[in-house]
Image (cartoon, rainbow, N blue to C red; front, side, top):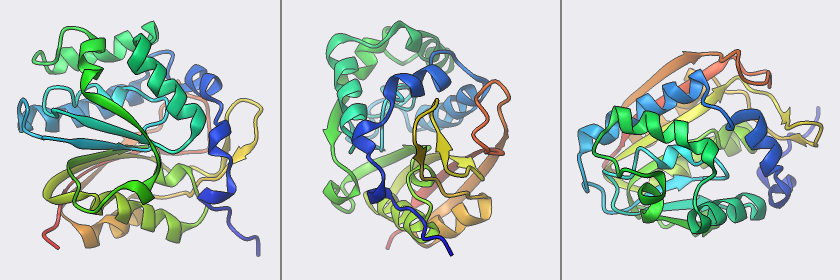
Length: 246
């Protein structure tokens, strides 16, 4: 039996940022629209300035989960352990976002006109933090968001569940959790690079990982997006839950 590769076995410092962006985020895809609509609906309900500080877990080079949070969250910690992803994020915050992100932000503003007029202004509350789950204190945040992370960094289902638990526990009881997962995605390649570890999960696996830590747990499935590279996934799972009082 082959030993599953875990998060620590991959060189995340060498994550191929430019290839990843070229394959997934240089254009607005239908799946991105679905994720943004899902997240924006919660932020609109919460209202301006309602969350003192939130966390984007494993932010990497994907800026769009940070965008709809700008009105509701007064400050956002974008947590990223890999050197390449962290460097890209810091450069985007310091020098200004790539033009390719503008269609993503235009959609966010259509969904929530209370957002700042420019993407650069929306990102002013974001701080790039180099680190992973080990640097986050329990109950440290009023809201947590995680996009395509826990299932995309390990082949070990037990480690996937631990990551989801760590993510949930960094939010205070009563705080909100938002997440997106690739459904049933096996280990994958970006371009012609190395094989990165991933853990195929479905709605049942995700529910089992979050149920002990949450209440009002909702999971919605989005059909596979044919405009994206075929990594072997079967769609996307969108999660919203409230951190349980325990």
